[in-house]
Length: 489
Image 1: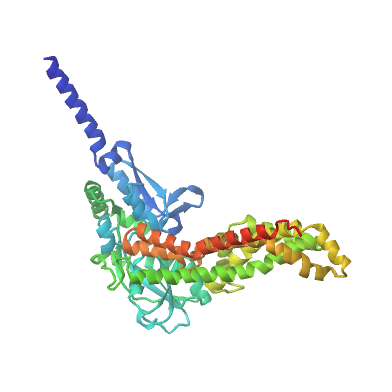
Image 2: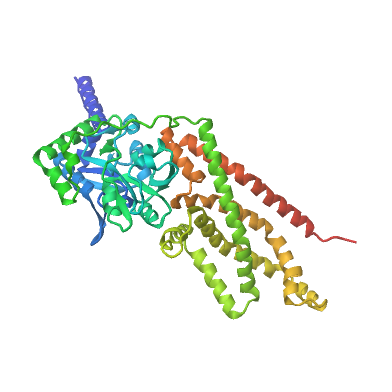
């Protein structure tokens, strides 16, 4: 009898434990009373964005849709901020329950995750300048066309003979269209109507280049959650709540009454494995990285030397101005400086992406080089200057022939290390549409549905570029140490 009772108790315990740990995602959501979903605030209005009156509160038409869905599931909703390009990978690793943020239904995404029924039908809108004669996307051969990475619009452009410019934000492509940096912009009508079509000098073509749908993404295996959300979405369509939300955000249009388009297939001929073509693309990106870094350092060295001379030997006003420059560029992020150079100054000083990248990195690293050279100049023994004066050299000649050469020799290893750092910091220039090594890695990761192989390839190319420079720095240090040893006669 005791043995039977013990077995019953043990069985009950195991069943309880199994029930706690084996429930599906939907059960877990209902147990905690909250559905967590991923989105990116950078997508801006009207998707998901901060309430101007309460910055800690997320608002937008997708927030309203998710709030309605959560209510119908009997829980609350909690949006989580993630970078848009990482929403699907973060979903797969379990960072949140589902994601909804302008996720376009494509065959590639359907292979990776579960997709809900559509909640919005969008059209791809082509925008050109008002003086352009372009009336169709087929008239843009050889032209620069802006779009967002990992979007259907990007897929469409891959099948065209155009110069694709990839952006992270939604306003910047239209700003560059106005200034003439690009010839056209292809983005969803939700974005085009909010950010581009109402701008001066921008004309949006009326015909849709293509149509697609926004969906909610779930992890593979979360069929119960998908089914519950699909049922709730259908109920929202039936009772008119979905239309009320879209009307509220001025998004309801004739597309919503027409049959939803089929899930888009991938562009034919696009690479799906890390083959020779991908290696070639990485090599091109590595060349861009090396070229930008080299040109930026060529700019940083003379500016840094002038700043160092100004701080050590200059007039008091020059010393103050030199220090202001150094503190300004060292005390603010290089990413911010790139944004200012490329976007903020565009109305008064229009730079192309490569020029802005070289100038931004060069001006930033000049501040760091200035401190290296200043320390090197101060390390030169005072007797060297006094000896130069005794030989009849004036101030300029003393600097040119005595002090600067010695300081440069001392600073050379540190300069080499700074160039290696600049090589890696060049990854930031992707924010101004330059496709360098890191950006190429993110693009390849989308093509290959994984980060490991592109990440290893990116690391390998960086090592190929940086290891020889690091070795050069070590050799210079060893040589300088040998040269500075006391020699006996």
